[in-house]
Length: 338
Image 1 (cartoon, one colour):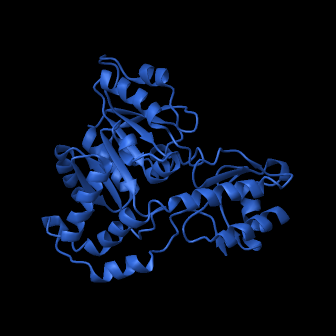
Image 2: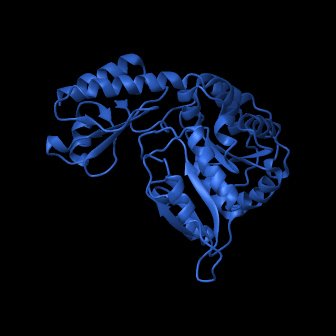
């Protein structure tokens, strides 16, 4: 099988496995795991924040951010297709007791004027706007990159109203590589940020939540409350260190593979690539085949390709480091033959 479902299916590299085996460990709840401490220090430096916290997943990182920033009854502003709204099981309401105020965006690009109008005024009839959440790259936008210039505009509006911005940067490394910018070009326009180690960077488990020291101190308690206080977590942190030091620049290969995949699929007379392919995600509209995405995915599986549905007539293909150039060419031939 050529697995194009997600960059989450990657397996740790041999070097990661060796580092995990040899990792120095201690009790992280006591702050005594040297490998986790090293990982958090490095991540905070790379993201331009005072402190960082290792969490088990991107979803947990996002939820801890909301819980730390907000109180029950508050309102947070998000893109209506954001991961936090679409793919996290309604957790912001279930755990934090906040309500989402959603804005329709253009592949994650929120209109600054719409954002300005969505922030609540000081009226007892309204919930308090206490957080704005952005996503970069934008998953449902097909891995679209939100440039720092646009983030700067939104950050300025947030500052005018004294509202923090949290960035769901699960694939922020992809955005940075795609534009040739450092991570701080993006994170300077955020209050807090979450990045995944377990997607394109290939670590088996984990994400990083970063912000001010005061924020991370509070976030650490929320992590504990959610059952995320790990013990000898350095076994996982060791892979995260390899991810941050050796796996970022190679994301450019995944991006090249995605562009090649999109180019090849476009040769099929009934298939249309509907995103700009900024990074490692290709969205394909299959409407003209007369099939729905579930049917088309089954046909792909029969010829040895795994993909995922992204709506009734849209299929998502995601490239990652476990795929070779030869497999990308094989995948193109198989799709075009359908």
